[in-house]
Image 1 (cartoon, rainbow, N blue to C red):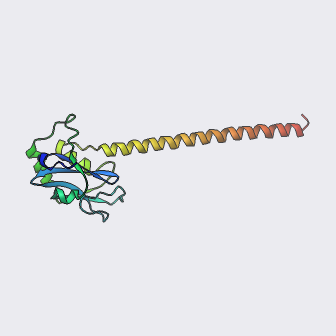
Image 2: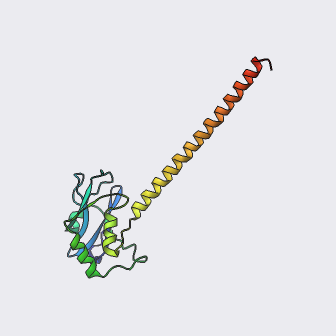
Image 3: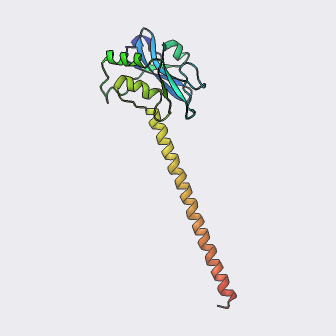
Length: 175
């Protein structure tokens, strides 16, 4: 659901992309400021979830409709209850100051949502990065549980083998 007529400068806009959300900050007159992948994987607004260690993002100011394309988007100032948004003038100046600059990209630590929330609230935050970190932690815990179960099973199997060997040796000795 695209909400063009309700947009106010400084609003965070969440765009639904295939497999992830792309975040931009609305700066007025139909323009947004956002980060764009600068390591050859994407076009305007496309942030790859698989990036190399040398991958960077470039901050661009572009027309909202060009960035959104056919993707659905909506205003999502989801941290307004947690943090006080910075004054609009500060948000707009900060956004403009970043245009043209490049930064290292990291899906979990420095993505488009981190950038947009940094500009609006002065604090980088990313719900999708938090969800990804939680999934990684759960996968590690599950892998550890599987490894632990396999180790216990191996120990039990080895104990049984040792007992059988002892029994066989004691029988062959005549005991």
